[in-house]
Length: 94
Image 1 (cartoon, rainbow, N blue to C red):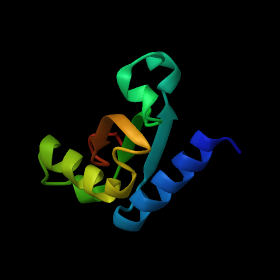
Image 2 (image 1 turned 60 degrees about the vertical axis):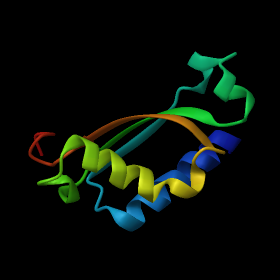
Image 3 (image 1 turned 30 degrees about the vertical axis):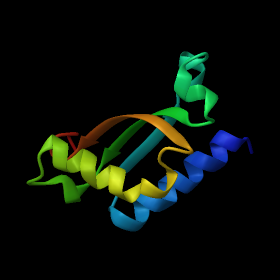
């Protein structure tokens, strides 16, 4: 298992402790940002998509804050940048 695969596994575990994730995908997009200043620190660029009922009645900003809080131990050392799609089950068509 690569370093980023291990990181993603840890990210998912931390998110699943907080959320009832009906769908959770995290993609490593670090290769798209090679040479970027943040890449030099070792922190990766990731894209996250999560569908969770906990997002009901939360604004987009509140959803992102909740995700950042759940992943706080990984920021900024392991996560330099995070693109987030946080949806309710209804919004995701589930």
